[in-house]
Image 1 (cartoon, rainbow, N blue to C red):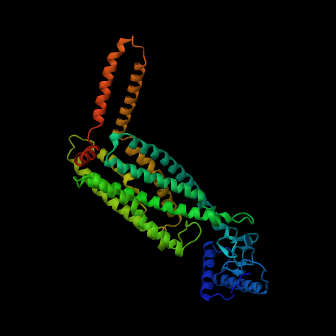
Image 2 (cartoon, rainbow, N blue to C red):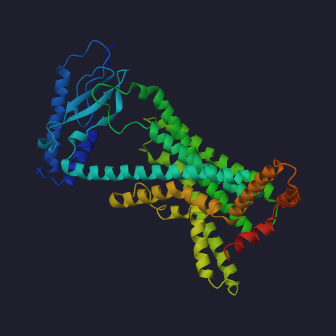
Length: 472
């Protein structure tokens, strides 16, 4: 059954809007053809009328087809389903003589409906296209950088998580919070890398090979990956907030049961993101269900996710300022024992920045709508690079170069070597009586080490003093 003919009547407001948009593009391109906005609108109006006359005289195809129409930019003839239609660049463009051989591409779906995308890159102003290509090259390089950053973060965080989980002496509330933070960083990195693999290519498929698989199974998989990515990113920010709350409680509100509060930390870290991701999914499905949900054309919907994340960044920044004030007061009172307290304060400040995500405050007040040109690229570069390598920095600072972790690794290594030497001595012939004395002595050492390893964990007061004194 053929689709109904296109309605030839266009509203004056829509026509004027389209004409002004094209006129603005022409003026931005430098107006090299010497046309005014009024002349450009007249050419556009004449092109529209010719398109309508052509469509009215054209015969509708017998079978299922996408209807001929004028989409406010170019005239489309009837197109067969499951095909990529093409139309010559509209001649009303001021730079038409430079793009006369180009085409506009559009997808006709299997259901006889035009797809949501339209590729008019061949008809763009060549002067503006050079700037676009430069920006695209920068974005591609940024993608390589953050792919490397997330991959390194994923590997180091996995190793750090295994270390903190393996050694029992490292099991305490502080490290439990670190473990969950590491896990959130890992999920964020894995989700972003997976989503990038599932996103469609930026341009249309070559020829008439339509992305049918993408429009069906792959589209659902990509949207699922997008939802998981938003949840993992939100969980990462909430666990950064949990780190800030725990540190603030440790230094300011000394006392209470830390084990009881850890349940609330888990609920906040993993449960809070669902409170804003689920409404976002429902709104997107109902009102902006386009492609893989990678574009945020309706900014109001995007603020459903953006607002809670900005709140976590702001709260953590205030916690960071409060913690710095506490550290300054403590270090100043101990200047006799810490003559280099300024250096230690600077070191502690740099250590807290990746843990609390304070670097996000640099461009947090600047929205995506306000960032344009070089400022937008600077914002993207700063946030993407630091966010992708943030997991790597946190795993190094709070695991690999942590003195407690290093001490426990050395103890484990010594115990492993001691067990190996004891097993070798036990396999030796009994005529070597000289090996019995070291055997008894070694067993005593192992027993002592086990007794020490089974000691009680430090209380909240001891933990707070140790955190504050670790910078001195």
